[in-house]
Amino acid sequence: MSVLVVGSVALDSVETPFGKADEVLGGSATYFSASASHQTKVQLVGVVGADYPVDKLQALAERGVDLSGLEHAEGESFRWRGRYRHDLNSAETLETRLGVFSHFRPKIPAAFKSAEFVFLGNIDPRLQLEVLKQVDKPRLVACDTMNFWIESRRDDLIELLKHVDLITLNDGEARQLTERANLVQAARWILERGPKTVVIKKGEHGAFMFTSSSVFFAPAYPLESVFDPTGAGDSFAGGFIGYLARTGDLSDASLRRAVIHGSAMGSFVVEGFSITRLLEINRADIARRVAEFHELVAFDKSLDS
Amino acid sequence: MSVLVVGSVALDSVETPFGKADEVLGGSATYFSASASHQTKVQLVGVVGADYPVDKLQALAERGVDLSGLEHAEGESFRWRGRYRHDLNSAETLETRLGVFSHFRPKIPAAFKSAEFVFLGNIDPRLQLEVLKQVDKPRLVACDTMNFWIESRRDDLIELLKHVDLITLNDGEARQLTERANLVQAARWILERGPKTVVIKKGEHGAFMFTSSSVFFAPAYPLESVFDPTGAGDSFAGGFIGYLARTGDLSDASLRRAVIHGSAMGSFVVEGFSITRLLEINRADIARRVAEFHELVAFDKSLDS
Image 1: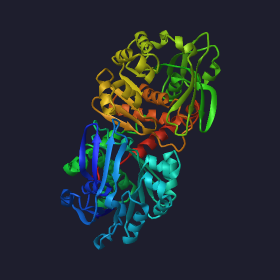
Image 2: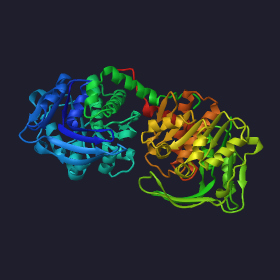
Image 3: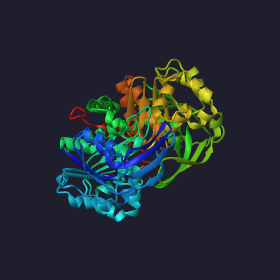
């Protein structure tokens, strides 16, 4: 089954201790699509300005990303400029120019309305709700969010929670949204408000997945060098939701494997700027890394305990 | 096989968002012993002042901790007073009074010299080296350390590394010691200087174990409420080394199970003040939590990857 993603398509300029990149492909929908395309067909809805180097998106189209929902608007594309210091843990935003993204009103093409898997990238929760009014009856709706919406659109976000099956957010956002310092309590708070599954991403410290009956934890892959952390969260989501869409299996066992696929994609994307690494790897690379995740946490509980 | 621990025996006064405790049992050797006593016999070497409530240590003696190496010195016992704020991640030290601990020169009783498993708790690396001169030929020597010794006794600490098989330290200490921000690189730096096994503890974010040929990760148990984080690292070490001493098995598979036992003990101790919880639980509780750790990270890698 294919997956519909709605989110930003941006131009990023990034500086890390290891180098810099100017005006490279960025945005939540871009990272998500490049990642999910290793699993299944992707339908992208977003907006770019007249200045966007759309030819560079051809690499996504070749990987099965349907770009017919990408709106071409008058004006400048969404640009983000940021810098990572030595610890690579948090981006310092130097400049954000929303451009055409500030007036984005997602329009879901007729051919996309029957999407069975939907990922609402990090945009205004009012727009995320509007998207849901335009789609038929997805099997799974997942969303992401960020601190800005938690502060400025709290009520809308809580309304959105009633309509999504799954939410991904990072630990800081989970604490901010729920006003709970403890992540187990934070997850329960969210589970009580709609989603059946809550994924709390902790960056280099891995990710938790909570349901009402189970807790799963996936470490981050212990990379010897992280090149550029930009897009790790959206690449995680792409691997995660892409895996579920490909298998069509929403069991707990499948959700766990999906988290590992998400973690694998997050570990690949940070090995280079932009979506470079996601375009280089193949299914065998992913399978190998999934096996490495298995080895990383494997222990025999039956002996001598 | 029994395990010899050399470290501090203190009186802690702790304040957390959930309550406070005055002059309760603390110190690295105390936590280590209480934890390891669930696995095997423990021989403790430390020092207390004339004012120490030694009767309270009876609970340890009843659990198989041999206190004949506990020196009773003239003067005041080691006291630590600290506070944890809402996030419980780092202790704020309000007062440290070393007392008799400042003149501590560990003397290993004749009956302890043949110890096969030795844990050098966090004391001056010069003293840790002196301990090693007093013991015969242990199968495994493990040590802990802290930022204070990394700053003030760097050369001695690097000398010590040549003589230990295993080191446990937290992520901040690993970065400080090795001047590497990346933990994989930090672990390799340490492995090149002596220890065959490096355990990097990340508190609520779990623990990595590195050897030259393998990386293992254990998450922290997702507790809904952490009551008092004091002693988590030493309780981890007690479960870890205690497990190895009990089984006598130093294979990679056994080291992995040992890390999980350490993580389990760390998760119990933070449920109460001082060593309270470690005295309440039994082997069945530990086995249950080890099984929960297994479930927490379990996924089937063979399907659909």
